[in-house]
Structures are given as structure tokens and as C-alpha cells.
Length: 615
Image 1 (tube, rainbow, N blue to C red):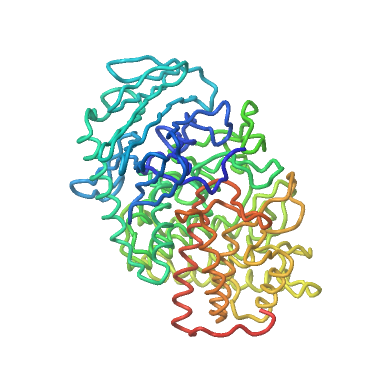
Image 2: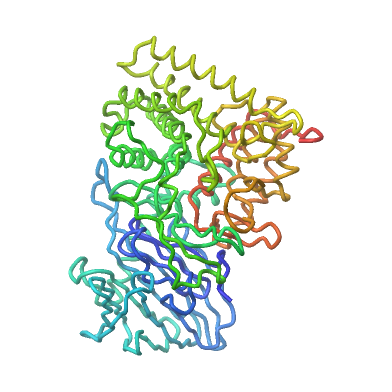
């Protein structure tokens, strides 16, 4: 039986990530980038997918944590003869001086594993078995100067250790016995030799650990949030930083591909790309925590990836170049045999008109945070960007689209999309009033169009029978995305019709504290689990409406649903409580950060109010 998705913690270096299970097995690793073909993917196929495993003799208990304020993972093991600690990290060196843009640390394309015996004696074996290119390339390991080199075409991985390491078939084993106080290191290095200085002894490995801890603790110290949920908020921020691709400033939606949203089903997508939809929440989350540089880097990525100053803005981008087409990997069984495993993402072909509001809100939030004194890459030809984005938003105001949930059905008139077009125009006007080069008559025209669009969706989206704003015009389908537009001010949180909508969503889409996205047909197989960001949007809507006591109680129960190190996948199965979908998911952690800060603000404003009956 494959391990639960919640079993996995993440380490990374802002270029690539590794997912490590509670038993110490590295079951997912793409090198040298987040979107590179996986060379460890036991997460998706226990037989064909490679891993770097740890087998301790007589193991009985396991516990783990992140070192405080870092993305360095420490797993503790008890055995019948002693105890040991496994420390996992992907080294990042702090820069001598932080550059204005680009990477703020130097990665090495390495995974370092340090196993220390704390008491008694421990024995066992590390096994390294990569399966390059999603297990599509054969691999030939060979001993070389006390190390083992794995080669598959132009891909290389070197395993070195403080203890003897030997080839066994297509794998390499490092067998050990450690007494109290002794430490073993195992180092996996990707790519050609000479790309990073060799690590030849324990002192060198520990030096990498010290510098990496320094990098992460310095980064965490910049977090300005000091509220009651700092631990959950900071872990979410650290997760978002790991999902960053530092050279370009991109942020992937999640670290993995192919993990199912429905069991059984065929919703097994690749999330290692950047969605324009994440722009507003990403920038907002970083800015509200004091990470203005990260927000600026993400906007730099969007401006450079587009290159058209808003004329050809797309829904989906690769982190450094065009994303590949969607492709099934039929040779992989999938997690719990749920296939097909998909790489690439066909959403790039869809029409989703809410993206103009997403980008405009991100720009506006960032500009307000820096008092309209942005970096040059963000500021470059800004009036032209406003012109182009508003023109495109207005051109599609009466057009249907596939919507936020990327339904694989016909295009529809989505309430969320129409409201986000209002967001685009409203925020363009806010920006225009604060920068040079935008005529007053143009701002007035945007405001007038925004008012018309708002009046239209407030009328057409209201369903008298449901007593709710529905997700699609002229239907009775409820959609949790309606809650999201409240967070942008597109519908007032205390509007009686919105409070009635929230109650309807809780009745029809709710499972306790959890919320389904929708119940309507979507052209896909299987019934998906609840969508975790929706549950956090509900917290924010309740808080904004002054229902702070209920919002607080739900929020605290939600954050307790994270795994043992505070990470969330995309979805939660309401019946079992198990996590579903790709992990860790940036959208969920953004929603958590936004809900925590909004909840604190609303409690300060309203106090802890009791919730009226029915809401």
C-alpha cells in the first residue's frame, strides 16, 4: 500500500525539491529544476519508481520536525538497540550581498543526509536507486573513486558517503553500524562533476548544514507576522519559498505531478508550473508577511514571461520557458493505482478570463505595499500594461470561459470570472490615480465599466430559488469560488445575499469544516475530495462579515488538519481525513496565510462576536 500523501515533508534549495516520507525514504525528486523529469518517483509507482531509502535494523518509533525557522528536516528514530537522528537538507548558501533581483542564495544541486547515533548503537543500510526520466531511461551505476556514479544518457547522479558504498544491480548500498556520537553522511549530487566544490568529509557536510540553517533562519527572521498563528503562517511562507524557482522568480503551484484528486478518477495533473491565478494571492501573502522582494521577483517573472506588456498574458507559464504538452505516463501505476499519471498540463489551451483581475490585483497590492516606488522591472511601461490588461478584460466581459476550476466541459458565463473582470478594472483605476501617464478620463471610463459589470453579475448571478449567488449564470449550481470574490471586494461580505450564499454553500458543498468546490458535472471521472483553499476562504468570509468567533474556531481546526510538520496538499477526503492531490500545494498555503492575517485584523475590528443563527 503506498504511503499516505500526508506522510511527505519537503526540502529544497529554491531550484528543486525532494519529498521525504516519515520512514526517511526520498520518494520524489526532480533535478535540476522543479519541472525536470523525476529521477526518484516511488511516490507514483512503488515498483518502477526509484528512491533513496533508509532501512534501520529493529526500528520501532519515528518522529520528525523542521529545525526551527528552516526547511531542514530532522527525523528521529528509535530502535531496539539505540536511537538516531536523520537530518536532510538541500544546501543553500547565503549571499555575501543580496542582489537587487535574481537568486538570493546559491544552490548546489545536492541532497545531504546526515545520520547521527544519539544513544546505544544503530545499524542498517541506505539504498540509492534512481530511475531517470520518469523511469523511462535505463540506468547504469558504476563505482568511481569511492563513489557511485549513475548515468542515463546525459543525466548523471553521484552518490558519495562517509562509509563504504557499493553497487548492487541498478542500485547502490551504504551499509553502516554507528555507535553513540558517530555520524554518517550520504550525499547525492546531480549533474556534471565540478559544478560545485566536492564534499569530502563530515566537516564539509556539517559546514553545508550550518550555512543552510543560517540562510533559512535569516529568511524567517524577516517575517513580520507576530500573531497567534505564527508557526503555521511561517511554515506556509517557508513552503512557498521552496516552491520558488529562484533564477526566474517563478513559483510552481505544487512540488509534484500525478497525485490524484479523486480515488478512483482521472484527475491526476501536473502542478509544476506557474498559474497566473496564483499571482494575486502569492503577492498578497508575501507582502503581508514583509517579503516584498519575493513578491517583486514573482512580478518580475510574470512581466518577463509575458514580454508583451499585457497584450498576450496567458493563464499558464513554464518556470523557464514554454511548458510541455500534457502527456500520460501509462507505464506508471500511479499513487494507489490511480492513473493515468499526467505530466504537462492541458489547461494552457483553455480560456480563463479571470486572469486579468488576478494580475491587476497583484500589481495594485504590490504597488501600494511599496508606496508606488517599485523596482524598474515592475514599473516598466506600467501605463501601457494597464491599457492592455483593461482592454483585454473589457473585450471578454460578455464572453463565456472555462473558469477558475478549469472544467473540461463547454465554456460558461462564470460568476467568479465576471467578478474578477470587475477586479481588473477597479484595481486599474486605483493604480491609475497614483501613477503618472494615465488620463483622468480613462480612469473614469474604467470605473464606469466596472460599475456596469458589477451591477450585471449581482443581478444575473442571484438565484431566487437557491437564495444564493450561483457559480454560473442561469443555473442553480453553487460554486465555492463565489466566496473568493468577496476577498477582493467584488461582493460585500456583509451583503445579506452573500450571507445567504455562504449558508447555502455550507449546506450543499460543506462537510463540517471542509468545502467542496462544486457538485456540477465537470467532464471528468470520479468524485474529487474537498478543496482545502475553499475552507480557508470560508474562514475569511466569516471574519469579514464579523462572524469572528466561528471563523476562529474553524480556522484552528483547519490548521490542525495539516500533516505532522504543518504541510497541506490540495484536497482533503471528507470521509477519511486523508490528504489528496499534489503536495505541498502553494494555493492552500497562500489561503492559510491570508486567512490568518484577515482573521487577526477582523478580531481587532469586531472583537470575538458570537455568530447569529443560520450563518
